[in-house]
Length: 136
Image 1 (tube, one colour):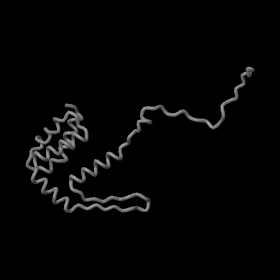
Image 2 (cartoon, rainbow, N blue to C red; image 1 turned 180 degrees about the horizontal axis):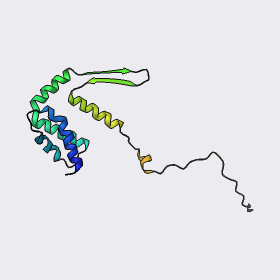
Image 3 (tube, rainbow, N blue to C red; image 1 turned 180 degrees about the vertical axis):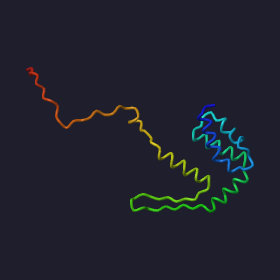
Image 4 (spheres, helix red, strand yellow; image 1 turned 30 degrees about the vertical axis):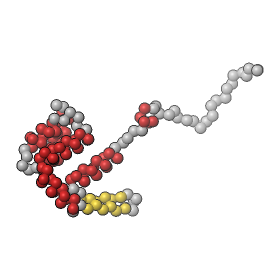
């Protein structure tokens, strides 16, 4: 097990442990410690599996209640920016977080990622060719 896997297990288990007060923390940690590849996709999939294993009825009832009282408002600011204010259920908040972090990360384009920078262009013409002209 790597340090990254252990850190990921601690971080992700801490997010969902409060949902299951009767489950031992070590049980939830064991699910995350078994991860080989802690990518965002595998973490989401595993979190769904853990939730399904430990709290199918309680969580779905809470999620239904949360979704009934959700609010989302946005306001256009004088600067042209948008202010979002939301009270979301955990499931919908996870979707919004994923969408925002995915779209805000830098994405190199194939053209700029592999090609060298273009040479600088000059506005001055090249020097004249002073070689003697050969008659044709």
